[in-house]
Image 1: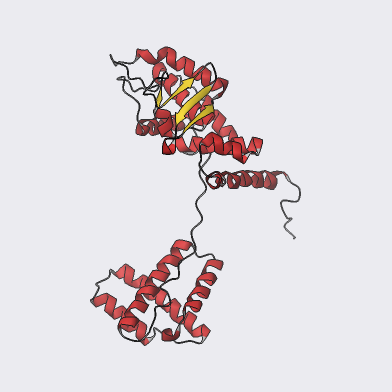
Image 2: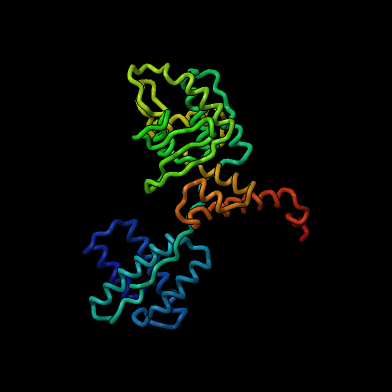
Length: 309
């Protein structure tokens, strides 16, 4: 049964605020939950205090309710107590300073080691050789060096006074301009160097008469955009048969995860990625743990219980 005060409030939001039926239905459910919790605690709705609200939030969180779901419930409750205050029925709003638990940040998507290597090794023989050489070099820098897409498209073919970044093939390094205009040097490895040498040998064969200084160009000699890189990688992943569409940041995440799996050196990964704070890099320890957990589940004799346990 809906408490009388709740019914009056629902009439108010239905007729005065003209809420949509869907929103009204959600308010009805959330306020029914509030009434049930108040009954269980032995308090009237007008006697609910902040410590009650905090306890109920903790209970909902413990039952698996998401932070976003709890935030929506609190929003409905908060509006109800604002209305009660206007009616002179409560002195303070017990929901006012209560916030839902923060939702856990989703883990970045990364390719498995074998999948990433297969994607990087994919040779699209049916494609235009010029485009294939360019795209292969881009993949090698994104996965082999962990570059951001903006750092990739900002690279010039040669160092210069106005260059944001460039590659030094002799040293096997990429000089990039990262977030906050911070420069860093990233090792790129022999495979990336070979891919870049192949691309540079073909780069001037585009249709543009006045080539941009950019390392990676479109067909008409202009600097390749981030959106174009996204499109080319999605196309490449479709042709390569990759399980999920690949985007530039996925290759950066894969780079970080695989380096951490091999080395266990979080500080080195932080430096390679150009993160200002180690906390930003620590998300990859969660990816690494997921990988280890899967290996354990698949291989360890104690990982799986028998049906009779």
